[in-house]
Length: 321
Ligand code: NAD
Ligand code: UDP
Ligand code: UDP
Image (cartoon, rainbow, N blue to C red; front, side, top):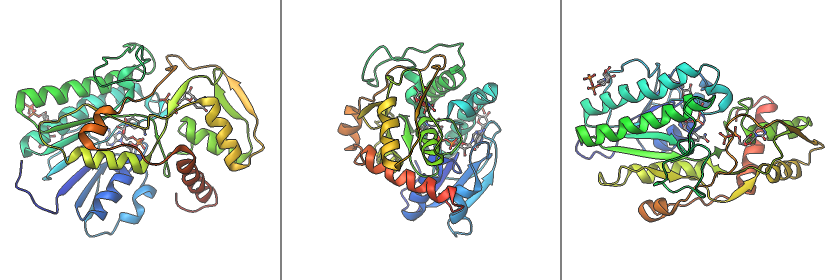
């Protein structure tokens, strides 16, 4: 590790995306120098427009599947499309982004002896047979299905992180992120929160896949970023993996009804077929995060949805999310 310096040079790959842009905001506010690296596959300049021109913010258009030679103190590796619609658009590129991207960012971290964070995912648990999912659970993942490019790509990235940790004593932090929502989510990325809000605001049918009895737990973005920062501050003896998410579980039907009531929408529920390999239940076991990071989400679904709905309304009326 480099010697401690209050202003760190911190690189965020995928920094123009939903989570990455919120992370850049928080790091800039904390007084750090931020290098945002993004190829704009799903991210946009709009998400970081307010940071362009800031003296401690720098933007680099770059694809992490290619080597990168820069000088930084810490790395957050978030580059990867996250929604099924986006990651299945070019599945080979998705796997390359996770795997080649991890190799390049780990090689960079190794040369610099820099701490490196990996945005892993609850999808490493697949369609889980254990509920809720603790970090020790190895998962139930289809290696050859339509979601595999994402799930297996992220699993292989975790393998690489832990091999660099064991083989090269690299200072790694692997977080398994569960469904997160908030302002700057892509309005058209097909994810359930953004779909339901857009449909409710536009007065079109709310599309429930399957019978809506499948569950998810939704974490508000500000809570999640708190978790990233707390995890990054832990000692080298805690590489993770650690689950970060909100353990409050809702059925998809409950979510639809809540969005309709909060927006006062006239939308009706419309039931469509369930996509292949769609997990029936997902809920993080966050005991490890509570114990090691003294972290747990504070923002409940109703409060987080209100802020998200407002940001979508602003965007629909031509403003910034
Ligand atoms: P996002 O799509 O908004 O952000 C991903 C960013 O990575 C985008 O800005 C995109 O342009 C960039 N990117 C993609 N491929 C790249 C490449 N090859 N080189 C450089 N940049 C590239 O998604 P998000 O929700 O902000 O997710 C960020 C990270 O968190 C991802 O790694 C995702 O897998 C992980 N994650 C997110 C969630 C969630 O609920 N949002 C859940 C689990 C894991
Ligand atoms: N790499 C990079 N930036 C660096 C150092 C390495 O992008 O500053 C990439 C490089 O392309 C290399 C990969 O990271 O292939 C893995 O690096 P490592 O040193 O682990 O392995 P090697 O160079 O032996 O392949
Ligand atoms: N879903 C739905 N209607 C939509 C979009 C998604 O019913 O318009 C369901 C989807 O089938 C899944 C859940 O909502 O069961 C969460 O989907 P999302 O794509 O947001 O995330 P993930 O499946 O990766 O958790």
